Image (cartoon, rainbow over all chains, first blue to last red; front, side, top):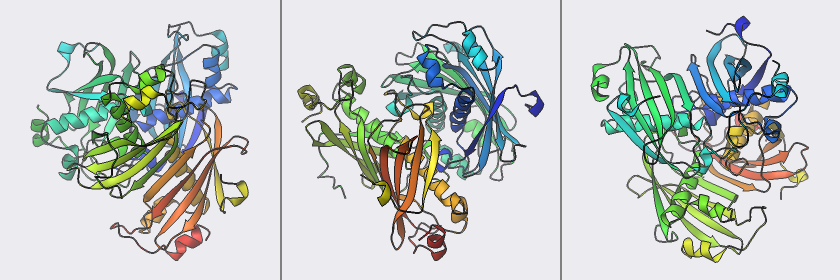
Length: 140
Length: 140
Length: 140
Length: 140
C-alpha cells in the first residue's frame, strides 16, 4: 500500500521488541497496542529533531490526536523485532498528519500501516495556527 | 457525524466508568484506550446475543481486526461515566464491520466514533465465508 | 490466604468480564492488568461511599500508590466473569492500605490476592495526615 | 533499599523512554506500567543470554508469574529516559525470583524497586524442577 519510495521524509525508524504484555490470547500483538507503538515512534521523531514533545507542550502547543487509523496485514508475535517508521504526511493550517509503517526486522515486509491526525491547540484547547518554529523543527 | 437514527441495529450500549489507568498526562483518556473500549462493547454485543466470542473461536471461527479507525471529538476524564454503543454496520462475504459511538452519561453527546473491520478466518488463518449461524446470531 | 471472614469491611465487589486486550499469548490475563483491576475496584469503593476520587483530588488530597503486591493463584481467561473485592485493611498516620481479592463468578474461588499502600499527600506532594473527612468517608 | 553492590549478578540494564501512553492524569507513569517495564527487562535479560523466552516455551518450560511486588519512590514523567535493571535474585527447586530497579538516566537514583516470583511449569501447568540448561543459561 505505502511504497517505501512514497513514504514521506524526513522519517524515523523506531526499533522495538514485542513484549508479552502487548500480545493477546490469539498469540499476536493486540490491535490497541499499535497506537502505543505509533506514539513511541512519533516521540522519537520529535526527539531526533532536537526537542521533546514535553518541551513542545511547555511552549504552549498541544497536539491531541483527532483521528487515528490502522490497517493490520501480518500479525506480530512475542519477542519479534520490529521497526515502526514514522513521518509527517500532511500539514494543515491548524493540524498535521503522521503516517506510520510497522515493518519486520529486515525492514522489508510491511506488517501494518496507519495514520494519525493531530489538532494544533493552545493550553485552553483552542485551535491555533501551527507555529513556524514547529514546522521548521519538524522539517517542513 | 453518525446520527442516532442512522446508527445500525441491533445495537448494544456498554456502560463504563473511566479509570485512572486509561488517562494520560493530558488528563484525558489516552487514544489507544478507545480500541479497548470498542472491544469490550463488541464482546458485550456478542454476549447479549447468547454466545461468547470465546465460543465462536471454539467453533473454529476467528474474527481478527483488519482495520480500525477512531475519531476523537470530546476528551473523556477520570471517573466519567460513558456509554460505548456498538453494532454491525456492514457484512462482506468473508468479513464484517462494526460501528461505534462513545457517548457521555446522558447518551446525548457523541465524544468519539469509530469502526473496525474484521476478517472471518479459520483456525489456519485462511479467509472463510461468514457462516450462516454467525449471521443469524449477530442479527443479520 | 485471605479468608472470607477475615477480609476487612466495609468492602466492595467490582464485577468484570475479562476482555481480549487483558489477555496475553499464554491465553490468560496478563499480570500487569491486575493492578488496573485493583484500581477499578478502589474507584468503585470510593464511589459507593458517595464521592469520586476525582473529588478527593479537588479537595487537595492525593493518594499515590507507594507499594503494590499481587499473588496469582489461578489464571483468568477471556470473557470469564470475575469479581474484584476491595476494602481498606490498614490506616497509617499519613497513609492507608487497601486489600484485594479476585474471585471467580460464583465468588467462591480466590484467583488472586493483593494489597496497595497509598501515601496521603497534598498538591505539592508532601505527606499530610489523613483528613478526618476522608476517614469518615472511607468508613473508619 | 537495594544497594548497587548488593544487586544480584549477572544483571541487565534495559533503557527506555517513558511514553505518553504510560502516564496517567497525575502526570506520571501509572503504577501498572511498571510490571510491563519489569517484563521488558526480563525478556532482555534472557535475550542477552542467547535465548528468547519464546524459545524457552518451545522447549516446554513456562515461567508464569506467581507473585509481583513493586515499591514506588520517585514518580517518572513523559519522555524521561530511564533504566530498568534486572537480575535473578533467588533459585527455588521449581521456581525463581527476579529483582528489579528502575533508575533515572544517570543510573544514580533508584525511582522504584520490585520483585517477581515465577513458577517453573510444564505445558500442562504442573510444577517441574528447573532444568539444568535453564540454570546454566540464566547464569547460575
